[in-house]
Image (cartoon, rainbow, N blue to C red; front, side):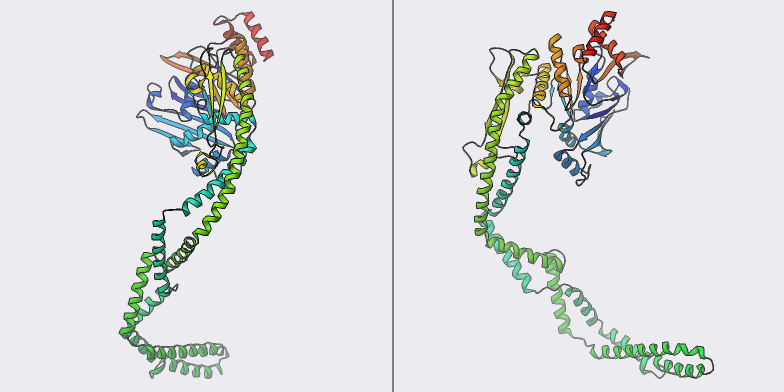
Length: 568
């Protein structure tokens, strides 16, 4: 639902803020007052063409901003989550979207959704979940056959069956994808087997061990520094143990002296244990240095062996992921892949059996859905034609064509005709005048006629599956009196399940408004400004009286207006 629309420096509008309510929102005003500018601005906000030509004369920058309260829809939620605009795990019944489009005199255009930069492609994908605009040649959904299918299913109450068909299609598609992967070109398979076999043998032959490369690098570093290590070890051994004034000799002498000192001053006795520990550590270190020196030996053969092994490990790491761990993971995945290929025949039999079951289940459900649509189509035609007659199109005819694209192809060939909505193609046909043959709706309906037809279709279909804002402009073109009254009734009915925004010149329609807004245009200081106001009851009486009589409002017109509002 559209809650708020802000418009700044667009066309004749300087600054304009419009609040909309649930139910039926009516825009009225003199011809040329700027009502259509508001509808056009809303169209631009949800993806229409936005250029610098739309800027108010003399303005450097303009924007259109809308606040939408949106009921949760899985497809919409997924779309927003993928765009980083909502958390995918967030389970909410409703949420708000703020959409803002900006344009500058240079022609630069920016789109923001919830204060994040967005693309025009995303905005147009969101449009079908937010606003439907009908009138003045802009029919966003009426001429799409996908819309025809949705309207018929809504009328028929096929939601549960559609869910079953979608689930069955997902299973069918998953099994088919596995079969397609399995049945790749045989030559490619053989080539892959050869590659996998070679890589597995190469990796198994080298007996990789995690951390081996680090250990070998340490050993190589020791072998190439034997002389230095020997000198350091022998020098340290002498200083700690072997020299006459070695550290151990000095510690022993200090211990002896401290024992004697403690006989005169007992507090020094507590240090004896620490000195004894130091002596033990020094002895252990000296023996370790001696053993280390005894084992040091330069071996050109071992060094060459280490360098060869490190070169082999380096080659494998570069080839299989950059580390021994990655190489071992590649070995495991290659072994698994080879086992799958070698058991492909058995797996193919299993998948074909699974495919047959999934296909049978899918086509049984889609055929059931096809029959339900066929039965509902006749009732839908009758209901629409009745509505057409009430809206000054008594001679018009309406027909629903339901065609199963997979009929007679319920085998492997039929898979290309399958979809998550079933196998049907639904299209509405229309004839406005006697003697004219029925033709696809998109080729014969336009303008106010198309707007009234969409109003009938949506009220008949009870389009409440996903409420949104439905806009009708020029829906009252060429009608009046009783027909206007019927249009108002249908708009009111539709507003029970969707927010409706309608521009009208007919008081018979305006009296049904839940939220009546009047648009006025005035000249001030050589500038033309557009204003909008929400009417209270007295304001509505005056506006309806104006619509009834024109500029000069009479007492009789006011009385008639009050009577109309009383009925509304």
